[in-house]
View 1 (spheres, helix red, strand yellow):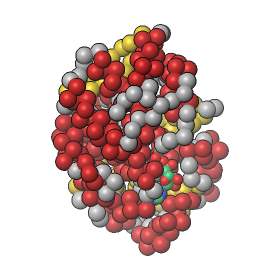
View 2: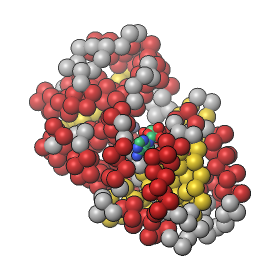
View 3: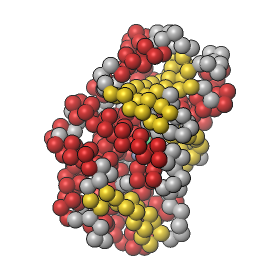
Length: 351
Ligand SMILES: NC(=O)c1ccc[n+]([C@@H]2O[C@H](COP(=O)([O-])OP(=O)(O)OC[C@H]3O[C@@H](n4cnc5c(N)ncnc54)[C@H](O)[C@@H]3O)[C@@H](O)[C@H]2O)c1
Ligand SMILES: [Zn+2]
C-alpha cells in the first residue's frame, strides 16, 4: 500500500492506494461518529464488508446513477445527516463511485458549513480520478456539475478489492481517464504500454492507480481551484468528448473521452503539433480500450454543442489541450468553423 500526500492550500489530504486500504479506512474510522454514504448497487454488493469493517457507522444508501446526482438526492442526504444528529466532530465517508464521492463531498461541505470527509472510491474512475482533487458537485437543470464546491477530503482510501465486481463498461470508464493521463505523463504512458495487453486486468489497474493519483495530486496542488490554467490539462479529450456525449449519450463517459482524444489527436497531427509516430502510440492505447472509433451521424451539430462547454471562454473559438510529445502537451485554439470541419473530415476515418 502506498500513501500519497495532496498538499493543497485549503487542506492537505492523504491518499492510501493498494490492498489493505479498506482495512486502513476501517481502522481510521473506528470509534468515530461516522455517516457512511453509499448507493444501492454498492450496498447490495458490499453489505457484509460494510457491516464487518464499518459496523459502527450510520449507513445511508441512495439510488445509484448519474440521474440521481441532483438536488433531491443531495437534500435526502442532508436530511439523513440531520436526523442522525451529526455534529461538527462527525465524519462523512463516501463509499461508492464518482457520483457518491461528488455528492457526499458536497453534503460534507454544506452540513454545518463543513464536516470532515473521507472518500472510499469503489470504481476505477473514482480511484484514479474523481476521489482526488476536492471537486464536489451535483447536476442541476440539465447542466453537469454546475452546483458544487472545492472541498478536500481528509483521507482517500483506494482499495483494488472493490474493482473485481465492476462491469466492463465501468472499467472502460476508468481506463478512459488512465489513457488520458498517459498522454500527459511519460512514465505512466510507458508503464501502460508495457502492460497494454492487460488493461482490463486487476494487476494493471492496481499498479497504475497510485501513479495516476500521484500525477493528479501534483496538478491539483499547483492549481487547486482551477484558476491558473494548470488543472486544464486534465480536460484533454473532454471538450470533443463532452460534445459527443451530450448529443449521442449511449456510451460511457470514459469512452467519449477516448473518442474525443482520438479526434483531437488527429487534429493536432494535422496542425503539425505531434509526430505520426507518437499519434500512433496513443491511438494504439485508445484502440485497446474502445476498439475502432465509430462514425457519428450529424457530427457538425454535435460539435456546435461544444460551443456551450463551460470551459470555452472565447467567442467563436474552441480551446483544446493536445499532446505534443511524451509528457508534453499544449493548448490549441481553433476557430469553431475550422474545428467542425476537422471533425467531419475525421468522422469514421480514425483507426
Ligand atoms: N470530482 C471530480 O474531479 C470528478 C472527476 C471525474 C468524474 N467525476 C464524476 O464522477 C461521476 C462518474 O463516476 P463513476 O464512473 O464512478 O460513476 P458512478 O458513481 O455512477 O458508478 C458507476 C456505476 O457503478 C456502480 N458501482 C460502483 N462501485 C461498484 C463496484 N465496486 N462494483 C460494481 N458496481 C459498482 C455504481 O452503483 C454505478 O451504477 C460523474 O458524475 C462525474 O461527473 C468527478
Ligand atoms: Zn472525465
